[in-house]
Image 1 (tube, rainbow, N blue to C red):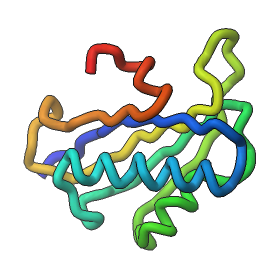
Image 2 (image 1 turned 90 degrees about the vertical axis):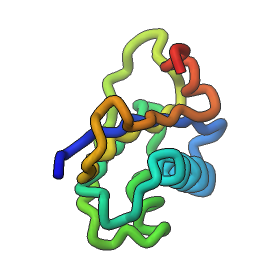
Image 3 (image 1 turned 135 degrees about the vertical axis):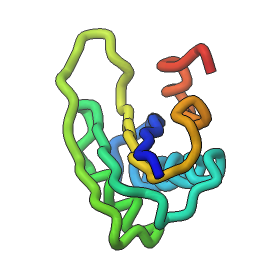
Length: 118
C-alpha cells in the first residue's frame, strides 16, 4: 500500500469559530466523498490558515467528525501581499492502493481561484 497526498482548500467570510469549523467540516467531508475514503485510510492531516484567521484551530473540525485517532497538525501561513484572504488549506495523507494521479483535490468557495485547472 502506498502513501498518497490530497490537497484541498476553502475560505470563510468571517473569522468566527462557527464558520471556520463549518467550512472545514464541509471541505474534509468533500475530500472523503470525492476520493471514496474511509477514516481509517487517513494517515495524517496538516491544516494551514492565512494569518487573518485565529478564531479556532481548523483541526477541531476533524475531531468533530470523529477523527479521534488521526494525527492532526495546524500551522499559520505568512502574510504574502495579494494572497487569498481567510483561507484554510489541507494536506491529507492517506494510505491507498490507487495512483497519486487518481487522488482528487477539492477546492471550495473562493479557494477555487487557487486551482482554476480543476
